[in-house]
Amino acid sequence: MDSTSTPLGAFLRAHRERLTPQQAGLPSGLRRRAKGLRREEVAQLAGISPTWLTWLEQGRSESVSAHTLTRLAAALQLSGAETDYLFDLAGLKNPQEKRADANPQAREILERMLPRMDMPAYVLDRHWQAVAWNLAAAELFCDWLGKPDASRNQLDFVFLMPEARTFIDNWPERARRIVAELRADLGQQLDDAATAPMLERLRRLSPEFDRLWRQQDVLEREGGERGFRHPRLGPLQKQQITLRPANAPEFKLVMLL
Image 1 (cartoon, rainbow, N blue to C red):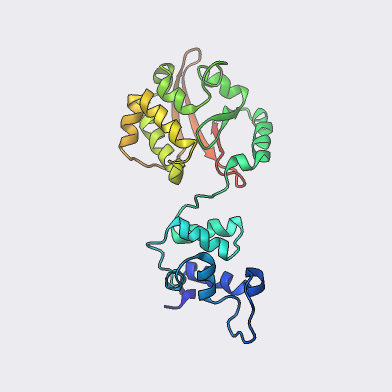
Image 2 (cartoon, rainbow, N blue to C red):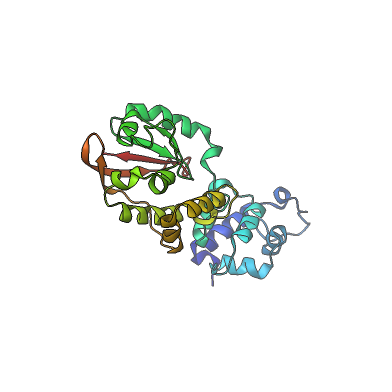
């Protein structure tokens, strides 16, 4: 199979051929017909077998691990964007994907933007902690963002605060979707040092969260109609839209039209 016949194969071969032995810290040799690095050299740098690399260049990524792709990306000296693209082509999620806390400017820009928005809007981090919100959001979520001593984690509000069950229209269905969206959102980060304790605490404190988590449902975070029963304003209907900044995709900007 020609390696250029698949997007993965074409990508790997192009980056292997553009990397010189000098850039890779290898001797160039007196007679060198290969353009860039040989497969055997890249395999050696990545700590994998040449057979594995041949299979990958043929687009055969069914059994490849994230660890192998990470080593291969390092051997090929790929940039962050190139590494993410390599993982996408292989059908895997990059466990080293840039997180929002590595880009403080994104949070600052979002915080400056929120007061200029008339609609309720807030920003969640990768653990669904509200890190910024505007006055309209504090007025809508009066028992969450509008209460000074309340937890700012949206999951705590939904599952641990009794007010949420009357405030959120059709709470059982919304709770089910939120847990399924959370699982999709966290992806391969379920066992990291910050995520695992958060999940353990929610499962211990909320039987509903524990039951829904064990169902293993996965849903993309979708917008749509959201109904609320506000203690002062009465029934409200909103259209929810969630956006992710391109340079900080672990932030979620949630707007309620």
